Image 1: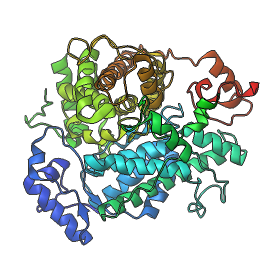
Image 2: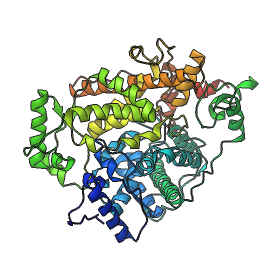
Image 3: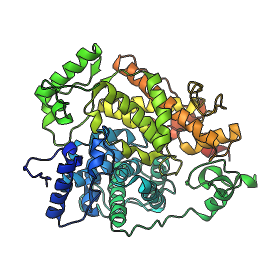
Image 4: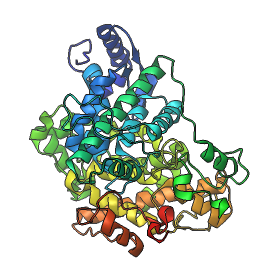
Length: 269
Length: 269
């Protein structure tokens, strides 16, 4: 679907943000979709040389995004797959400005950024897309919830089995948002090598699963029904009591990752 | 500087990529800057509904970017600060399409993504900018080098002392690309709390330092002088020999982070 302006040309991002074109285009989207367009941009913002977010959001079908994530993983890796899945789904429903997004920019996140095994690229790409459509004040709570959900989730889901290369694969939870832990745990659980076709299929499925979950969180948020569910483990909460956050006594660290896989219980030594 | 088309209107990204406008605009930039415009896009690419990278690159002054990174950290955190520093510096020299980039999208990476302490946001934002201007085949080698450099670099540099809130701060190397390790090591080295004004000033400086290094790597790359210097530690190389990469015997993990901080020597137990 293309967003049409009053003159029936596809509106550019600049026109979309500009006052006259902006609200007119927004109204047109609403009319076509039967409502549910969020983030209409006030005209004053169009004066900025660097247009800020959030971009318009319409509720998406998580299953459409799940499939796109799987498919696009094979074209550019996990960050690209997850980010493109959500942004392309929005482009199909909203049109501009999503056609102007430089999707190739999301390739760096593959395998935890350039193969380093840091943040899972499916999380990195999904969080970028969340950020793109969410008011600044609420980005961290939605992105943070996605990371928390990921740490406890058995991947991959079975939802891809109708079209994936391998069916009914072993599932494992990473207990971490890091690619290194996620891949290593799955290799241990499944017995497959990191370079195997099975491991890549697992990560393609995970890419779709994470993007689909991001869309579920966004849909809930724009329905006014978002509620954060993730809580750190009891052991990590104990560590945080002294080390992390403004209520902690030492406050000499930062983060929400589970402490024990790396640190064990350092006070027992 | 704005890139002007033949008709003196600011060219849009679409026009910039389109054949007639594209090469004309590219030639105009070259004329103004005295050459050194990379990534001119052939006309055929303009037909794509989703414009791909790489975006045009001109060599930047690392010191200009270092200062921008420091300043913009205070507006949106480390990922936003580093990404905006590079992308805005390119916008000032190239004009479109950089004025269309949704900079607010980079806020999610603050404090290792939504406070989780995963990838350092200055790395995440700098890698996004590297990806934006680099051909797909070379993104990982430049981004990976930046992560490797970061792990061994004592932060913050003294280069901000003329304008920063605090001068001559304690320096520490993170031995990791993760925010959690980077901040915790600096708190230990300096004695300051995570929420202190001193720690935030340290991360603002680091944001500028990482963005400046990214620009140094990009300048070298587009001069044909890029050479990867990072090598894993001897201990990590030993681990990799069995666990990581196509030459390893088990090949059951993924990553380049130093193994020993989390795993010690598991074979000694």
